[in-house]
Image (tube, rainbow, N blue to C red; front, side, top):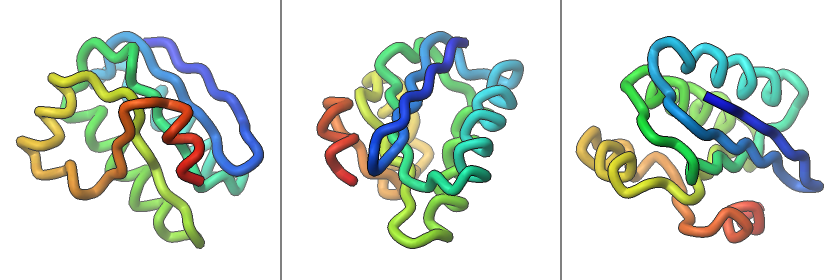
Length: 111
C-alpha cells in the first residue's frame, strides 16, 4: 500500500493505492490519526488506486469518521471509490456514514 497526503487550505487529501488489509491498515490509521492530532478534521480519502480493502480497512475508515465528526464540521469524505469497494460498503451498511464523490476535486471542494 502507498499513501500520499496533500494539504489544502480547507482540507487534506489522502491518496491511497494498493491493498488495504490487516497488514497495511495500521499504517493508514497512523497517517489519518496524525492528521487528527494536528487539528486537521476535514479529510478527503482518494481511493481510486485501491485494489482491495479488508474489514480492517473499513474499521480504520469508520474510526476516522467518528473522530472527525467529534469536531466542528469535521468529516471523512470518500472520493473515486472503486465499484467493488462501494458495493462492500453498501453491503455492510456503511454507505450512509460517508459522503462519496466520483471526482477527487469535487470532494476537496466539499469543504
